[in-house]
Amino acid sequence: MTQEQTTYTAKDFSSDQEVRWCPGCGDYSILKQVQSVLPDIGVAKEDIVFISGIGCSSRFPYYLNTYGMHSIHGRAPAIASGLKISNPDLSVWVITGDGDALSIGGNHLIHLLRRNFDMNVLLFNNEIYGLTKGQYSPTSPEGKVTKSTPMGSVDHPFNPLALAAGADGTFIARTMDRDPKHLRQILKEADDHKGTSLIEIYQNCNVFNDGAFGVFTDKGTKADTTVFVEHGQPLVFGEHENKGVRLDGATPVVVDLESGDFSKDDLWKHDKTDRSKAGLLMRCFETPTKDLESLPRPFGVFYQEDKTCYEEMLHAQIKSSIETKGNGDLEALLRGTNTWEIE
Image 1 (tube, one colour):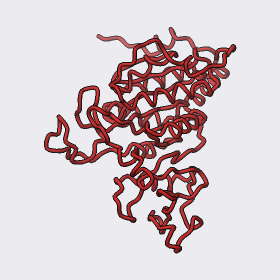
Image 2: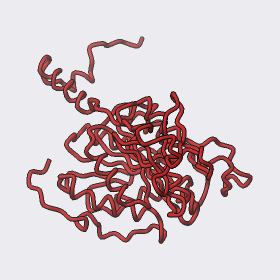
Image 3: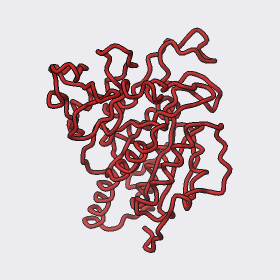
Image 4: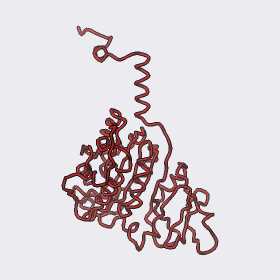
């Protein structure tokens, strides 16, 4: 880690490269918030690395004045893992999209989460393949009409957070490009977490899938369709905080706080250390409708736990081996002790 460290501003993390995203793309908002958070993480620029896969979002490393690599499709987790092993002191960030991470890179993502390297994964989800101009992706909803599904997609969409939970992820969160304040807060919490932080970011592709998350981001509907979860706080939502979510056994239900039948004390209080209840939140995945019984889509940190990181255990193992057996001999290892003759 670099010893001398400067006080940075967001401008210090802006590169001299021309940003080549479509005008109005949600990626601009995410880039701005990342640049604004980096000065606060207390790491020298030379010790920060962004690794990306393939897709519009994966041009991210070009636009940051840090080290980075625009790598290969779906393999950013593998490259980032090797980097973290070789230099555990680096601050490593993985940039990926819903196609990159959940289709060709799905296997790499789940094993990154399982191993729990100390790094941050920003999963830009726009429910479309934007770079290749509009094919359906693993997160596109059923019935989605695209260039590759002209009669509507018959695939069931991935739930990225449920996938992360199934891989025993230790920090699982969701935010959106159109709420910069919330996005920034989640980025800071993710970086503070020691382990793999998975942040799903709803990102609007205004060319090939405009308004995919409009029901959650538009001012006219956002209050009634979203609930922002905070550790220790009840699940309250609605234009006038007039609605809440309570648990009926293990079933979340919406209640009207204006009727007088329920108060905030009756509501589900979020506990981000409770894996079971976090799983219930992640399954609130249906698009809300206008009726009172419709569950809102949750945003925030769903789950967080402390767990030893892969690179720590690996380096401890190497140190222990050297202490007991001494430095290895690569030449002797390659030559081995078993020989045979072919007659």
